[in-house]
Length: 146
Length: 405
Image 1 (cartoon, rainbow over the protein chains, first blue to last red):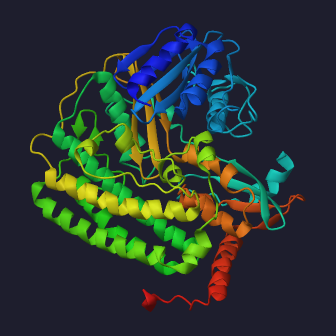
Image 2 (cartoon, chains in turn brown, orange; image 1 turned 120 degrees about the vertical axis):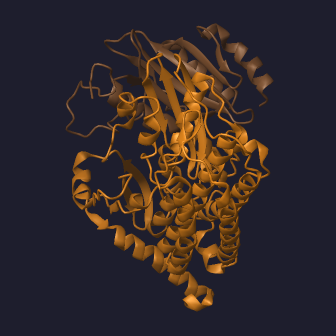
Image 3 (tube, rainbow over the protein chains, first blue to last red; image 1 turned 180 degrees about the vertical axis):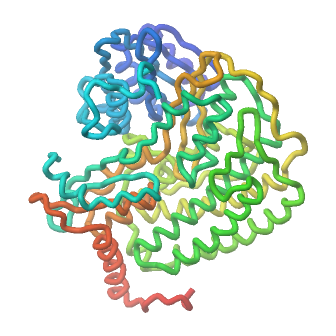
């Protein structure tokens, strides 16, 4: 869809979001609370038919963030849903893999290296870490030094 | 699949430290038909994202160019574009053209490498020899421009490290002319061959719907009628100034992916030649003093698809988070859709059709429900070639010889 139409459609979900941040003409970030992320992704993927690119897990200072990146290829706009997971002790997020099979691997990876639990994931076994890696050590967290 | 089934398979897995991308495919079969496929990766995880957090912004391109020896121009380009987005830097025009030329040369040599390997898998070793022979001068050109045949390390935040000397321009154009002619000949030979039609059409079909679900990119997507190409959709470097088109095919089978890659190779030669001819004068880099806090997304069309980098800065001299997504990461899982229901003899070429890596296909083993390894890689290669030979016999084609070409 054209960029103008995308902007209009995104305003439909403003209620679910903390804000709409625009860093460039074709870069939009949509921060939201973790409970809202699944619904926002469903809207982007099914209603707006944006293409899923990948997700990024971030160990931010006071929370974990999971960034689901989508693109609208017609206008070259990258739309990133930023789920804020406030509970650092038991970080948890609704899996988008049942919706988008292409997200299955990256959620397994974030589970391995950041210790985020993805609810309703079809197959949350290890992807990156070897079978003998100790439980409870998450290498991409900031407290693990290189 | 349970742990018990994995054990005998792992014992066969040849971990070869010289090859990148260790991947291991387990096929479950019912007779000749594949009923399930499982993939294990990360045998050789290098922790690049974590390492990147320990390096300064201008050191990271050298690290990410080593993610893949073939895509060693695309990864650093996607990274520097993300950082340039944070810093609000626009590189000089000449740098954008130099980036375009190097990335298209990379596409040519990567696609020719694939065409050669695909020929090898189905028993056309002449195609293998010829495609790799035409590929060689491209690597020589890259060496002359950047100093390296691979791992060019030529982009930096704000521009390029090495310029293309003006006296090299005629040589590049001449080589590109030769490559274009040879690739056209090779394309014609492949597309006109009834055996290749019979062998690859309808094999390993990835439908458009499955392609979208698995979020595939690059020739894997364009071979399934999904006409996405970052160079066109979110133009970077000098692509918006040049005349070229996105190649796509609707069928989704191995043949469609081969057509896309061959035609793209010719298109890449045209893009690179235009860029050389239009190469503007001026510097190839601007000075970048510091990277402010912020976040940026950079993506580039690598030979295998979209390479995506996300970078976050806190205003210091190192990224606080750097995410890398190589195209094979989303293309490989699509085997779930394209391999199930196929014959064992077609699996090697179906897996190879997304161009994951040479080493990937060497890690195939077939297990039956009693956990016994039935076939190893050599046996699968033999099966694939035997199927081609059988087709030749049925069609009545003569045995292929070098002088036929």
